[in-house]
Length: 547
Image 1 (tube, rainbow, N blue to C red):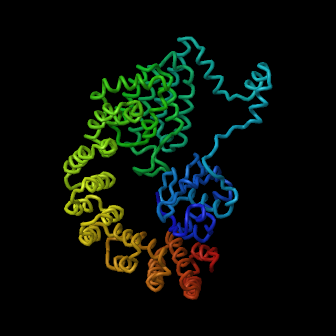
Image 2 (spheres, rainbow, N blue to C red):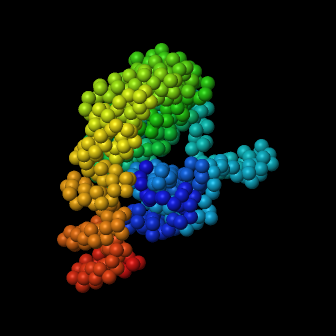
Image 3 (cartoon, one colour):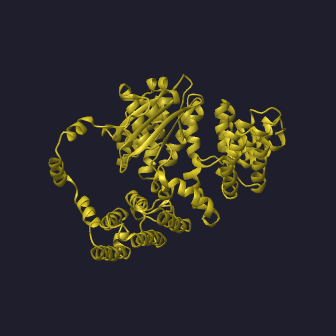
């Protein structure tokens, strides 16, 4: 979740009623705003729902795939998240905010209802069997008929189809031109695997082995520098295929339980040893491979074979069956899982605390905290530990300094400030030294803006983007300092040429205009006069509505 706005005036509903276009421009850079505006103008935003009791708004934005957006009020802050890989304030969030600002009357209330087109359904129910067959033959895709033909083929034909597909798939991984284009490669790969649909009952083992081969070869292609988006070698930007992941899960679902367990185990073992997480979603969706009647079988199998499974598979199968476990079974498994997983340490301590076994929960957390030495640790574990110590009347003052050193965040410092007896000044000094950016967040949360400004001026460890955000947010609190900062940004970026530098200049000019319009106009005129050969820069400035 990324912080979008402060909201001290009420709930999410009242915030949305007062949301203005200028507010949205302030929460992102102009490039992101422009892209979000395009998405809104193209009507890519739909299913916008406000859930008042949760102070949350949800929406869907159409893209290469549909992205889910959540905007929620937490305390006095409005935060947003999107399922796209960008992170932070993306064009999809901006598009949704623009929808809220411009079409508030079209926001629906409560949870989205399941879409059912009753007109179509009622019409189809009136048709005869012959008419339905006629429509099916006329409009069904070729793949539909191919799959039916495969399911009725004899073993000899099935083997021939498989051998052709197997050869074609192997050839794909030696086509180096194709491997430089992930989207083309995905299309070619799915074209071949789709030819196998319907053959699962004939060639379960062979298709499973071909899937594992493809997964392994994708990893090998990454290692050799192929299948990276835009042709650039970047560890965070490589081939994924939602269609292939769905194919794998559908294949797994078609297997008998024992075959399914073995296939998913082999796939997990393969993925567990890979350096890339391109098939991460397959593991996360393992539950889709099992029907309701197989969950008891999975529970029995899991409890019996737990020790022989990889850690990755242990975690996933536990998530699938945990609602069927007794308290004793859950406690046993969580004790095992917690040896390798922070999240399960927390879950174990939480269920013990809920059973009023607070001393046992404290022992679990202390063991893990001590085991990890001085390393960073998930703050929710430390926060639960603090709460349980306090509930037992234990003195937490000594542990407080350890807590802020292990969890160098503003939220941990805010947590510690709630407890009596904690030397909060010492804890503040620790965070200020260890993580100045988070200390800046802490000062802002506490409303200690003068100290925040002093930290910005003194510290050399706060990233420029964070300082930019600070002055953008507090330019009216410190107009002179903000003006000097944005002028420096402009001077620095005028030394270079290129779109990113020009965008930074335009964004800084917009901030100065909101502080001192006359100065912004003066700088703008100076740029037009002295840098008129930088046509893209001049065009960008001219496009700014304020100028």
